[in-house]
Image (tube, rainbow, N blue to C red; front, side, top):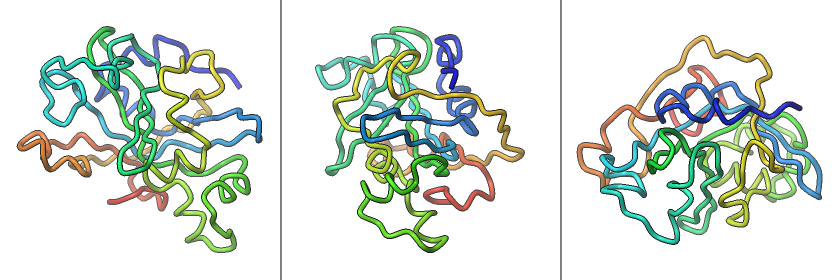
Length: 199
């Protein structure tokens, strides 16, 4: 499958968050290939966004990847779960898009094994990648993938010709500490998708 190129990722975070909806996220791991269609994202705007790890230009060993350019995986652990982000534009600014939910496509049995779930119902399939911590576990994404170049590594995105008809927006989840910034409608999701983590 053809990987999306650098220019795709070099969009400001709100545009990238919307553009990633409908794209296929793929992980070619030693265990096998898994993939899912992106149905929910969140944009993080960098220096001026109190919910961003790069707020006020803060630069640490943990968030260094945010400053290294577009199209890199920024993976960090929160509450015991790896969370997968894509670095956005402009290059050198700490902006990113969090991938919040996928519609599972390939390697569903492997995903379920990683999650410790039994398949057999629509509900179990919906829950497989519904949430940022769930999808990383299902996709085999760990902190070891932090800094990975999405244009050439085993984790990447590809365009399969899906263009969501209706995209809804809402406040981001779990960023109450960010004050007014927590209320901004910077979470985007495919309206009507049963795989979205929260409406």
